[in-house]
Image (cartoon, rainbow, N blue to C red; front, side, top):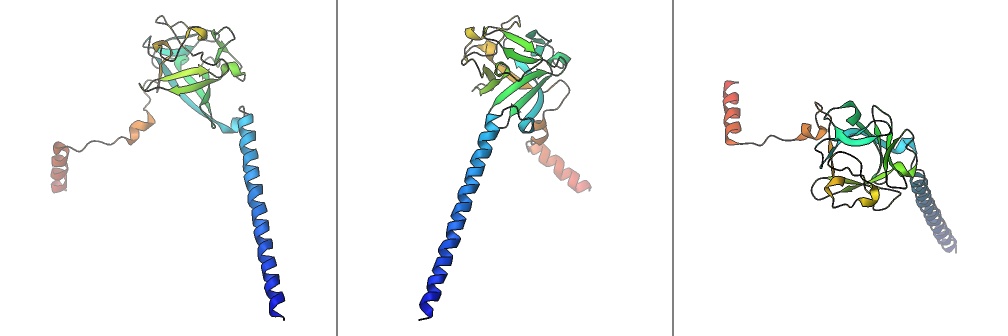
Length: 208
């Protein structure tokens, strides 16, 4: 008679442990969901921003985007101080803010589609979404005004967002490191092994 109560107690304890484990897993998943929601709801959280410095090469002008305060154009020289851009990227997604390192003004697009420089880049008008194209170029579309792109004509002047499409060369840009600065990817490129390099290695080994 004593065996049955002990088995019953064991089964009860076993189911009780499983119940608490299930509750804990549900709480963990709920906490993680709340964490994601809080971090995606507040895009201005500085702790989640990745800051990079590079240049934006314009396909139409052959020069670089530069921020001269309130004015923005694509006539900057390679390595020019106004062509150095501080790009703030959100961890969740490809939303970016572009600020001039020298002028400390952000590239923004107003309700008329005009490109302007502003000292405060927290508004949605100053947020762009990166679109990676097949030709290795990048297009930047406004996060607030859908279908309106950052673009410049052949003279380097900004185009109105309402007159742009992704297929236009005026909205195609390429990220470049400043003049004289090595691209971090270059450090990891391998030297191809040829007959000449093999011969040189053998001769060096014999000398040693």
